[in-house]
Image (tube, rainbow, N blue to C red; front, side, top):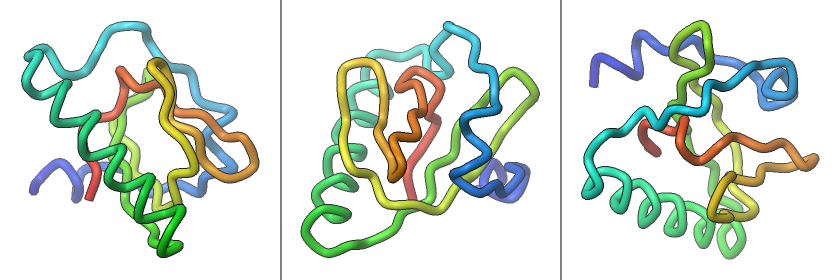
Length: 95
């Protein structure tokens, strides 16, 4: 996908310095549901198999990509190692 090549690759430790708008990057309810399904699948892979995934998301400055293990998913955030959080509504896709 073109988006993953446009996204700036960052380390998960940089996430705490980013600013996130409140608006959801996905406007369709079906896309939001699919995002949640993919996040939960990725969390299971991370917790059971120690598998890393690429998360493509948007902060106030554009698209970012981080390779990491998802430790948890709440109704508002995705939890990564070292208690790093990405707001759920800013995640575009999981690869």
